[in-house]
Image: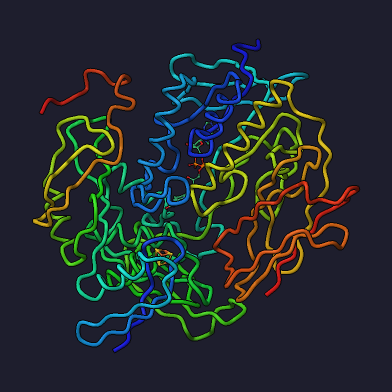
Length: 419
Length: 130
Ligand SMILES: Cc1cc2nc3c(=O)[nH]c(=O)nc-3n(C[C@H](O)[C@H](O)[C@H](O)COP(=O)(O)OP(=O)(O)OC[C@H]3O[C@@H](n4cnc5c(N)ncnc54)[C@H](O)[C@@H]3O)c2cc1C
Ligand code: SF4
């Protein structure tokens, strides 16, 4: 029961999976793409606002336009795309991964692949995960659900909305709800600074006179059938509620924009090592996980803020998976990349120094720093330095490292961020 | 007179200082020329790209994502949303296809940004003719 045999199977046809499949095909592999929804494009299908593709295409495209460019290539290359198809089971055999898929045409069926790319994206944090008290009335949604309801379904989820969290998706939805005729009463952010891009504060909130309340959070949802209001309260520097600062805001809808979590449930039975800081697998610069033949990219690897870099990671994972499936991969030799100073996380967590070429290193700062500099060093010797006027946790940074710079006998690399 | 602005033309979000007296406008803080153009426009008449959806006559693709091909005055955005809410797309469009030539008298076209022909083969016979 092994079914059709592929060199590379890609799970998830969002921008990461699309780029991975195209890259694997270019590298000469027989590749198939598995998507549980009826159309490819992933989350971009519902991101109808513009601002995508500035790095990759030097243009301000909307989400669907950005995805469409890759989807056209998938079609032109004749890459096999299973839509409405769910991955039910995944096992690592001796030479191949055995996948169990399900769809309405073929029911439950097996396929086998020499290499696998996990491009399953991320999911949103929910009310339970941010400890909001109260019953569970209707009218509490994550920002992504609201985005889907409005942009794909054509439903307005409420008339008077409060938004918790100032991430970009929440800001974009504040504008979208307003344009569609709802009243957005305010955006509440527990931290002392907004987590979204300043341009989104300007064009989504200021343009429409929507107030932004910093160091403020929602502590309770009122209502039993439908949300009737929320309690908000101010917090101190340690994010603890300030006694006596509680206020009641009547509203019928609470929209949560409180963070994304990489989606890797399907990998857990395989025993791949997961980095608790990113929520995604531990990888090297080829995006190979700790399990031979398994690659990870896009938001499943770590939450990205620009889709352009999601596609970049898909290309890296797809071509590496193809080389591995076609037996063109050298035996890896790994050294760890150690985050130091004010680094929150670094991807990749290790480098395959046998691979040569370049390695792209992504990192996030643990806190906002002005006049920051990051230094990559090996054995006490500085290899590369980069300066930034400012670094902020919501903005991912990217460095390209030339592996030829590594001194012979390198045992580990360190990445040190200082303000 | 001086005014502080944040350029929204790209994710860099440069902090701009605009000084003006009469016709004379100088912009500093912009990392590229687009910032200066943005600041000058912002003083006279702020303009934005509008992205939204239009109803369609197809059950498998009930809403078509659209955007303005260029920017329209911010103060015309709600009027434009009203006009867009009365539109119905009766043909299967693809990204870049024209939905409306002149949105709300701005002389800016409205274009489709998604491909309505995708997935069409799955639902043959479900089209409402228009
Ligand atoms: C609500 C939301 C809004 C966002 N808005 C923006 C934005 O405005 N700008 C921006 O740059 N970024 C935005 N992002 C980040 C965005 O997710 C990334 O830029 C990019 O879309 C991630 O691409 P991806 O391919 O990794 O994941 P996704 O686009 O999420 O694609 C993952 C795909 O995998 C499929 N899948 C998952 N599990 C399975 C399975 N078991 N079997 C089969 N298929 C599966 C999913 O159906 C999906 O199609 C947003 C994210 C979210 C969640
Ligand atoms: S001035 Fe140029 S670089 Fe700066 S935000 Fe505007 S467009 Fe971007």
